[in-house]
Length: 548
Image 1 (cartoon, rainbow, N blue to C red):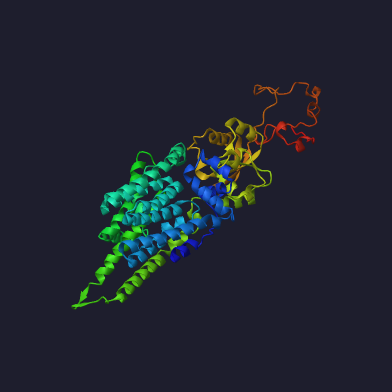
Image 2 (tube, rainbow, N blue to C red):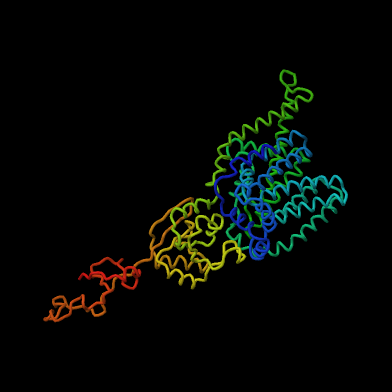
């Protein structure tokens, strides 16, 4: 637990939130009625987590405080994994299992993220330990703590309900008596009944995960590498070998193997029909891999103690052997962690997240002037302004119709396509904050309002300047100037005829034929010249000389 706490606190303030973290930050700072209203339309699956974070951020709203619950949850999970190892295979295996969980890069990644996944992992590890205790106690009262922890964990994220399937396989492999099945069945049924309303509401919000795709074998390989303390090389292959050896520790394998395989396997199978799979949704299954690796290492240590050399045993009898093997295992894990230190260090950079909204806000501070209109493409880009309002405090969000907290949405309600055209018609320049892919004309968005933004920008504006940071584009668009038109009485004459009458002196002078505030654009002038009606008032109020 000390090792996990140190790894979690290392580099916790990485200098910026990414999109999902900013959602947690801005939603948790709303009032409870505003959060409750939001959950009716979006993000119901994270409702309990938002309410929990509302209490946490009430102490101090900041990025470090936002991530501290995840650090604490990962620390508790490492201790629970160690406790499972102690219960199933002894103190040495427990020590190694907890350390393996702590030094795995995937654990450190989600320990430093302001989302619910580390808390869900802690709940699943605690529920697994309570399952073993309840099965040994074989009393009805012993199942209450188990059911309570599983229910709270599933309310933090409903896909944690798959752990019930893993626990069912564990009970089947250990051949528990009928009374244990009855106690577990009652607890599992209560959890499912409690979860049904959340599942029903979240089904209506399934559009939030429409971006997911059916996982292939590449995702299986990626998950296997993420569950290893080293994602590549010798450490990865050694981890797989140790897992295979750990299967010989039958009591531990009956708990760890279903936890490792059943939730990801079910979710990947379901996702072939309806995509729901992402690695972070099954973070809690990593505990099974750490337990199996530790059990395999225990098998290797036991074999080393029985090696003979010249007819004599190399192992030391008594307690010294346990201490030596335990210290040797800890040193091996320390070397593994140091070998992959660049991976851990790289993960603590804000550049390793999908985006960095603090950079977007800082760029807006440097480039935008007070009163400038700004347009977010797509509207989810407004999360930068919600998470870091300093950069957008004095600008005008031209598409916003109703702010996010008041509208019960994540990033506000925008104007209709018709209103957007009217609003954009009233400005000569506009700043656009966009994801790079969102401005690709070959990939038109499905939303009518987003299509209208791109259409108006393409038809009526030209790019004045552009700044790119971490995949986010900040562009200043300037309205295109209409081309100069010929005078209404101009006619096309044959090439050999003069455009003036014989008595040209009888015509009035050009200056006397025009109003004092008008100007004429000569035929050879550039097409970017303005017409009189498009000039600012400061220019049209002053007479300008006319040149033919």
